[in-house]
Image: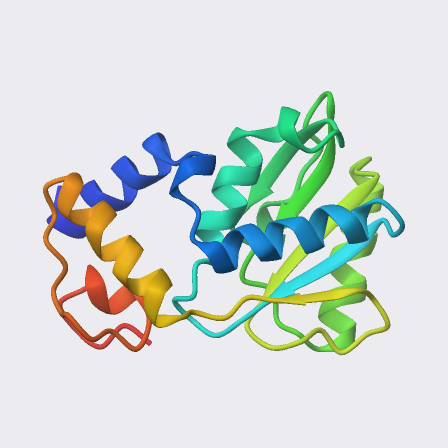
Length: 171
């Protein structure tokens, strides 16, 4: 297994609330607030700002939020019913209206009561939206967390978090 895959597996396994950056915590609070009044929320932000990591933490720490168990799907193609799970997180979704509505239909058909749709750009539909941005402080925090795992970051001035771990232009 290469360094990148090993690191991603370890991050996903060990991820918890304490690892979230300040920006991710703020986005998480907004998501929770919106899900209290709406059954769908769009989490969006550029590549490498930590959206997927935030989804992993939500899935792992589902009791913290009060919406029941959470199912994470890295693609809308993988959405399927999951017994006892009432909130679905669908990652890597195109932001156009047709894709958003198709994903929501599929999630409803599979029995999910609430849905977080993760996109790169703001969803082209009338749903609450939460933007996740990467700050310099966020990048420093993630760099330090990588060092603690024994994976020194590949750069000291990343434009996104992928640049800390991927030795080529990923996006």
